[in-house]
Image (cartoon, rainbow, N blue to C red; front, side, top):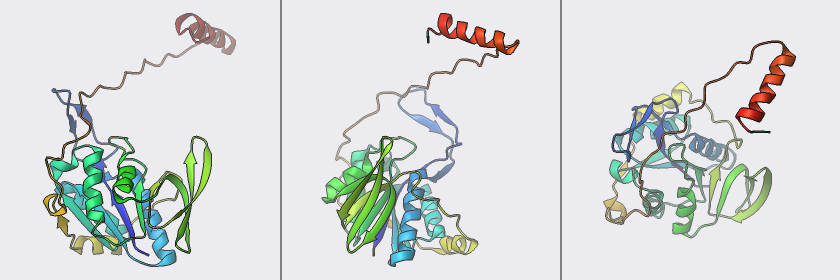
Length: 256
């Protein structure tokens, strides 16, 4: 079984992020990590490999720093990795990202494509579906369980408080949701292997994708989140404090 995992390098959740003076860009502290949901996808690929055999290959679109994410994936147990290196193209919208990834996938042989349900930097949850559309493949999203047998996949998809069980023929695209598994910590032997690994690079031009293809969306401006009001401590005896809370909710917040 040939499995491909699409990963994205994103700012570390603890990295500082500020809106640039233009309002159209972000200043992000240079601390990066593999996208959280892509880690679930990678772990599931490794578990399928251990059960059914076959290689796991990682594909990433990003700048030169994204090679670190690919080395992390190899350290976890992936067999191969490819970087589509183009920092400016990687910063474009989901349509262009999906187009580049699908062109790279057209050069591969695979049974399963696994991705995270969304990237935690932009939270748009759009690239996997468009990759499936470009490739003409079925797509099952936000999976929390995946079983493979007889050329078919049975997936449990978590949807708005319920679970839907879907059977689909392979090849197909699946997006991983939290709860699917618990990603492993790389062993030191895996880290050493990753440090020595030769990771080939592709260019946007080599994939036949025009840099003038044109984005489908554009950022008008970024807005900071609303500041939370200061915490208010209510002092006094429990009965008095409770009465004061009710008064605030009714008279100030108009919540009751």
